[in-house]
Amino acid sequence: MRIVFFANTDWYLYNFRLPTAVHLQGQGAEVVMVSPDGPFGERFAGHGIRWEKLPMDRASLNPVREAVTVRHLTALLRRERPDLIHNFTVKCAVYGAMAARLSGVPAVVNAVAGLGYVYASNTLKARVLRPVVSALMRSTLGSGNSRVILQNPDDADALTDLRLVPKDRIRLIRSSGVNVDRFQPCADRASDAPLRVLLAARLLREKGIGEFVEASRMLKERGRNVEFLLAGTPDYGNPSSFQGEEVQAWHDAGLVQWLGHVDDMPALMSSVDVMALPSYYREGVPRCLIEGAASGLCIITTNLPGCREVVTTHGEDGLQVPPRDAASLAGLIMQLDDDRAQVRRLGAKARERALAHFDERLVIGRTLDVYRELLESDLLTVARPAARATTLGCAGE
Image (tube, rainbow, N blue to C red; front, side):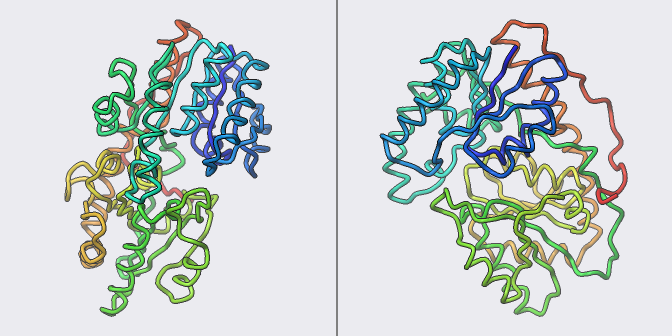
């Protein structure tokens, strides 16, 4: 059995989908990763997984260039002859479904983790693109022997209300999963140490980056000694991205410690107290939040689709802040700075939720259930996770 994973970056496939690919390989299936060129692609060989480069510009709107991309993908699928293709993100789902139809791939899974810039933004460009993208999704995602995997029920409701995908084709799998053995709570930090607050995400405006920086400015003006850490890089393929020069200026002004891309996220999370993501983006389920929850961090996020899958109730398993409200974010961070017991209590609750809902083995098992629906094969099996303790040691160890 051969399965193709197709995404718009090799970084995404390597960081989010490698565990599923490795599990499939262990079950005797061959997995082929397909993406545009990038610095992570060569790493797949170390795991015995083949990577194929596809000419693709994820930011392109040129119809001729996009048609060429679909043609190249169709040729690749005709050559590889997979039993199933699993596409990730809206653009790859549309193109992958088109190419699968043209090349005769018998089964298609389309994973859409949030509806992205076109549906999240209210810019003129996004409003112009929205009906075009909707028409493409409606004509491709729900056809043939296919399923659509979504990460939160709000997106499921949106796609069915807009008649983009038939309800019976949708399967809900909350997040891409997290390795709860690798991301673990650390021993309590000293109560007199400065509170350390981390935001780890692509540097998009809709992720609440600007509000995070403004909250830092407000607390500094009040004389608060709180450390704001920002991990992530600009996304030059997204028109909502902050530029590197802007972020460097915040760093130079002492508003944030800009860490750029971080390879060892467990070690970073073992050194902080709070994970903040004041997002108003159409998230699936943000990876940084489930990693923070698994690490036993106190989570601050918004009560919006995707984010509320992690923090379900304000004050119970995390804190919820109104979107676009830097003052409220600053107020919640001051509250935590004054009450470290609350930080620890909410972090423990977040860890419990990560174990129950976001363990990557649960996600792999549910993903393979979808594959079995389409392939009618008993080849794909998965060991379900056993019950776990809430705390397992320090993530940095």
